[in-house]
Length: 315
Image (cartoon, rainbow, N blue to C red):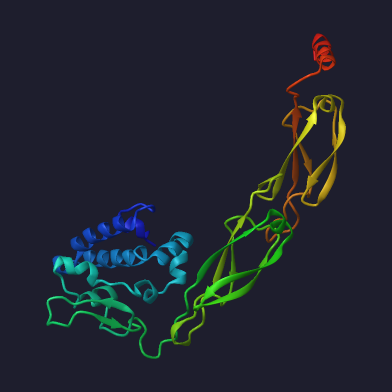
């Protein structure tokens, strides 16, 4: 499946004006009137029109960037892709009409669809037509409504234990509250699907789905790496040298951790099973306590003398 950005020769960060400029140049080059009988040019003309129909629409482009080419085509039918696309807006500057463009793009006579076009060079008042349901022939099953995407920010604790959040979305012109279940172990970038809570479909078809894109907030104490959790813990030099037992916060409460004698800075002590749950799996990750040896910035006269004695002893 060809990438729309590649077809138009633009980057994924291209502006709307850059995309339009690239499309206009390619549409002029591959227009059927300039390439009569050239099937390869005709096919390329179809592809660049499809690419522009998506990338020139802010919402379609956002969904294409989010789901990728394959995921986008699973959610958008050919009818959806060209819905609201005004071919004449570009072709008018070229002096081309649109009488044969529909058969080139869609491979048949004009049916019913939502592809807007404008004719030029005809009698006054002839410009402007709207084909309702162009791609859907008589007796075709109603199309499904579009999927929608919303964002949800949760805490690390909610991601660890799971939760249920009530979110508000604007659906079909009104605000609707929807309960979203958050599974334990979810991470930033994962999407939760709520079936049938997307846009309604014209003609009584099934509604699309709602996808909730999850963002897990940074935690003031813990750093997450997959299912593992890291906690930095300061200890005194004397404790590192002699050994001690400290209390460490975890996602499951305070845990006692034994520091063996001679522990050096940046040592990681493992607390098995004290990390995040594995999403859609069994068990949990681990928690790692990273030891940071605290060095005082100022010493009393007595402390300084003792440290100097230690230095003389080779410590």
